[in-house]
Length: 127
Image (tube, rainbow, N blue to C red; front, side):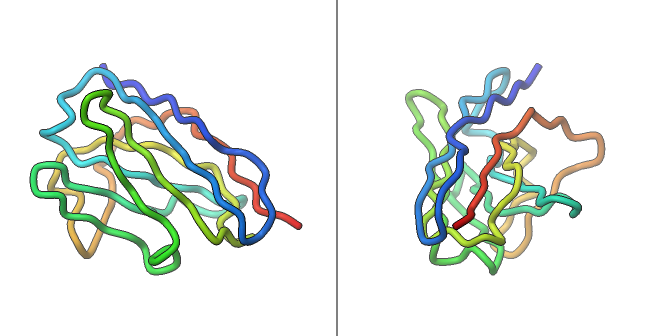
């Protein structure tokens, strides 16, 4: 059973940085796509970034390009999201995701029906 435990969220001023991480268990990392979704207050979930591990294909939603970077630590199977130049509109609960690779490409990222979600980690960007 895949489990998600996200960490690294917090409160930061605009222009600041945070580094989110999770160490999913219950799967073979190299045969999946991993990434991050977020859900802002009162809004639906949005795919932020993903990486297809077997060929390193990455996706970033337009609003975070140039500011966020997704990466993996293979020995520890850790997934990270480095977030720089944070803006108030980045405020959301961020979720670590693991899915079949066909859901992550260079141009789109979504989750299959009935996908599991972890608890998420809160990111608040405020003056």
